[in-house]
Amino acid sequence: MSNLEEAKRHLDIVIKKGRVHLYKPIQLAEILYAHRKNRDFDLLDLESYRNISKRWRDAVSQILVGGVSTSSARFQDNLFEPNAIPPQLIYALGEENEKPDRIGIVEAYIYQSLEVKMESLKRLAEYLKNATPNTFQLGEFIEGFVKDPGLKRSIDKAYEITVYAIFTTLVRHLKATVTIGVPNSKIELLREFEDFTKVVLGLTAEMNEITIPAMLYRVGVANAADRGLDMWANFGPAVQIKHLSLTEEFAEEIVSQVSADRIVIVCKTAEKNIIERILKQLGFSDKVQGIITQNDLEKWYAKCFSERYKSVLGATLLKDLNKEFLAEFPSLGDALTGFMESRGYNLIKKKGIFAN
Image (tube, rainbow, N blue to C red; front, side, top):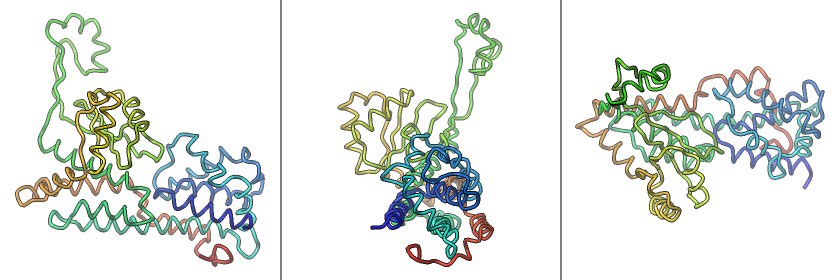
């Protein structure tokens, strides 16, 4: 197998393993683009582009997928490891990418792969946009990620947005509130540290108790390397959404990283008994407030869309779910098409090893 064939094989693996945003393939494409345009660095010298290529990638990904990679530097640098695309393979791709009769062909190949993933997202976005309380099926929505090779690696995001949407909808409509206060016996101490309590607790000696709406918050657009919490609440629990198999090492890492003393775990139905057993073995059961399964989520979604609640809960839930989907995957406009045209990728003819 030639270096180019080996490089193409590794590139296809990185693309296949990549989540929807394809941050690593985009970084590689921008390395090849920068070298093709300027050639002021050596593709075999990783240190000449390791860090600056992250800025090149972020500039493009902000436009195309509406965000930048927030993974650790170590996780981002996995791109250059031997099992991914080390410098010698990048060099082979660069040679092919700069041949006179196929200028930019590798770059175009990478961004065409992103187009395929975006088309899959658009189909799901259309499904959500046209869904009604009578037609939406949570299982069908999640299966849209499971069955599509281009989206399967982003199934955790599907879980996150569906969990967040149902949680926030129910908490909002329940009109739940949280009260925080300092007892009258501690008023003098409160007065002494009022500059602290006013900023941190929102309390003063004159107003030593406040009631606020109960709220849930997503930590943000997480990434594949994240293993902490996914949501937190102003009424206590932290929420960890788990869609993959939970090992003892992983369970210990989750619980040890989350400082909250009440954790809610959301998981696939088949994982519940395993998770409970592992948490009990590790002595972490007392930190877990409860475990929610996909079956529970489907039951709650069905109730929201029932005749009794669909006009209130159902409509709100679909609106929240659609909003979270678009926030998670904002790259559904024409940015990619315009980008491809501006770079001339749409005019590049497929040739050689990149013909397929």
